[in-house]
Amino acid sequence: MKKNPSLESASRGLRTALGALALLILLPVSSFATTFYVSSSGSDSNAGTQASPFLSITKAQSVASSGDTVLLRGGTYSSFTIAGSDSNYNFVHDITKSGITYAAFTGEIPIFNFSSITTAKRVAAFHIASGVSNVTFRGFQVTGVPVGTQKQSECFRIQGNAHFDRVTCHDNAANGFYFTSNGSGSCTNCDSYNNIGVGTSLGNTDGFGAHAGPVTFTGCRSWNNSDDGFDCISSSGQVVFDHCWAYDMRNGGDSNGFKVGGYGLTGPVANPMPSHIVRFCLSADNG
Image (cartoon, helix red, strand yellow):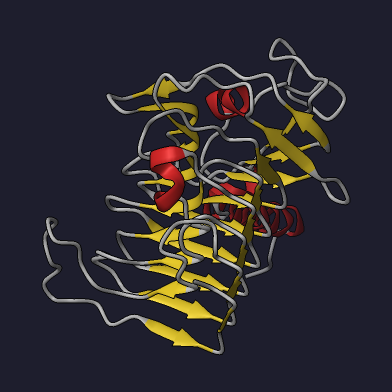
């Protein structure tokens, strides 16, 4: 039978269109991810574009979805409102959405200074809520987090799942990175230093604390904090320390470089008990 050239061409066109539609359907959601921008000179009335950035992470989170990225322009951020609270804490930033990346704009260093925050309750500069997963923070600094007469404050209070890359916590009266409850995740090439508690919090202010689920610290550095460099007492999950170092913890607390394992006199003991790993790490001039 002689083929109809017009019919054959139409058939090929239909097959091509169907194939392209199938590929479009199979594309991951991340292919359609959106990038929002935050600047210390922005406004939460703006559109969140590079030319018209938001002022706050809180606003950016409210419009972002899983797979999106929030880029933080360089400069100092010091004007905040309290985003949430519980019976003990005020959460300056309450991270309640999964899958969002908060990262420094290429070549710039955002600095978040929390020295003006009220100490009516403990302060959590960033709270990653329980149930939140796969949130990433990259390339910025946190400083000035205060504490009142409470037991402690924290730069990052992680009760969900979060990953940190080149984030620095320095010159706070608060713990740097504090994984608690069901918190899990990782810190890679992060620094925590000059974090000195006041009064009661002097002996509770660590550079890095992992007291929950599995956490991995890789290439992280802790120095001149008022309690321990790294602390994973009472952890229910395995904690891995890989190529990390801690020194000069001599400010009135326990002053350990690495406090690895063990349980307090009151809390529950994990069953099964985790086996922590310390490899290629250095601890010096502590105690």
